[in-house]
Picture 1 (cartoon, rainbow, N blue to C red):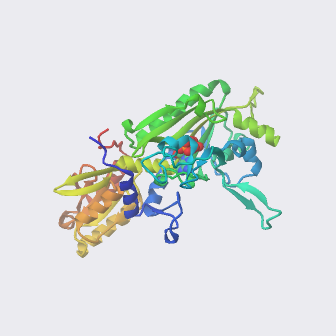
Picture 2 (cartoon, rainbow, N blue to C red):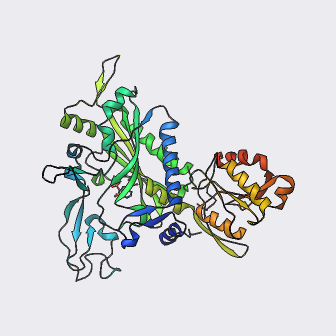
Picture 3 (cartoon, rainbow, N blue to C red):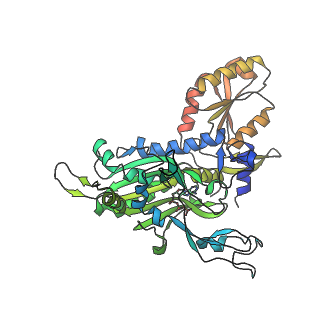
Length: 452
Ligand code: ATP
């Protein structure tokens, strides 16, 4: 069976339900920029929380960091970004569009979208030029005395330059890691496919410092760990693949990189990159700053520059993958329903509390009291407006895994039904058990009911 999801359906649902809107819309919008509404924020925060738990809470060898977005400009010279963080671009003198030279085969000609740039006789492409992706800005009030700085294009360098601080203060010994979530900025010039590629985005990066002889083993380990994380939170195995980079694709610092790709509606595309960066970064910053970034064993006095394994994931691309994987349509009792089959721990809202009849004061009172009780342990929504069927549909579209419905019987015997978003099964339980029941269901393993 083919998947019903398309990028247009995701964009439309995200807009309709207030997950994501085009940015600066009242001014005509700004390309490759998006704003996140209520459910988008909740979903994004859940992605980040699950990552941080897996990286920091559930382990003893990784600590957290939050470094600045604007760093000393020499950081980016030492890291190689000033000289090498660029894409090769070509311009078309006829249609005035700009394309990535390495993506021409997948691009569309501005005048004849059925052709690729360069394919029609009218196409007039310039030779490829390197275009640096870093955004520049200035620190300082006075133009002439200000300092040119960059908005960071990745969070990793903020980790490397803090290696000494963390190694000393966190009392960790290799192998150990430093994890960071934060915004990054890239002056991407090619169209973005919704939130897949944007000018600003959030990254979840972890730099894992290891003894040089162990680098390959930890590189393999982190590929498996990170793939496992996506599977644990519901992505279907058939839609995930690990793709090792070819030698000519490797970044200047990398001795091995594998992408975890997801089968988005636009085709297989990178979700996360896992790189074996060797000792490139710590050496480069040691040389440029004059501060030795190395590991010295307090007991044996052994010293070495650790090698680094880096899993680098995009929050927004992960969110898009979770949305695409979850999107489903089905017919129930002769009516179409759209449903987001999100993992309960990723879903923005965990449960809805719904009085069957919104005007019945007895039902409303019980429902409000259940809502107050549940909101203490999970993000829940109360809704008493409109027909119950409509309210279920709305919760289905935002991916709420459970709905508690208060009806006549609740008033008689203090029971409530809990409706399962995926199976539509309704179970009646006592009101007193509702909170415990919800927590059990939220903590239980979950698999997508969508076919692989
Ligand atoms: P691509 O080849 O798609 O441009 P990349 O290889 O340059 O990506 P990395 O530098 O490895 O990306 O960044 C790590 C992760 O950050 C990517 O896997 C992706 O999830 C995310 N990411 C990178 N650039 C963007 C962007 N412009 N918008 C949204 N997410 C991004």
